[in-house]
Length: 139
Image 1 (tube, helix red, strand yellow):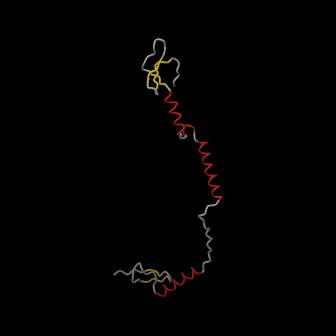
Image 2: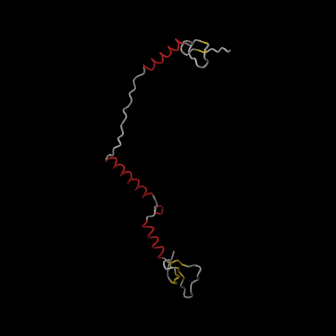
Image 3: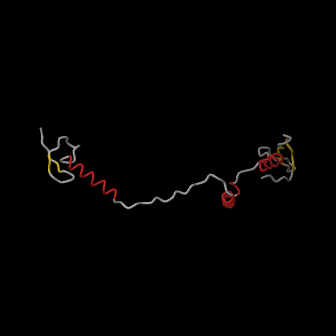
């Protein structure tokens, strides 16, 4: 059996442990003295006062409501100012206007050549018929 020697953590004396890697002290008196020394070191620390915890109430206050309203108003104004007009969402009114304007228009039929008097063929979407008119400017 191998004999390893270790140094006592309290007195520094070399010793052969009965339980390798588990035993730190050469005798029980060194172990007790080391514990007493550590205990006194903890007792001599200055008192540390913890700061009082601020209690957060779950109650609503008028100032909190006002701050929330001002914050949401500021963000809405900022988004309206910074968003381009073409990137803003369409409302129901906008869609109804587009449908009303779009269906009342007439679409130029490009594969029918103009008549001899210069009149072009257009397709009326609402009535679903072909109409010949002279001066309609369609984009």
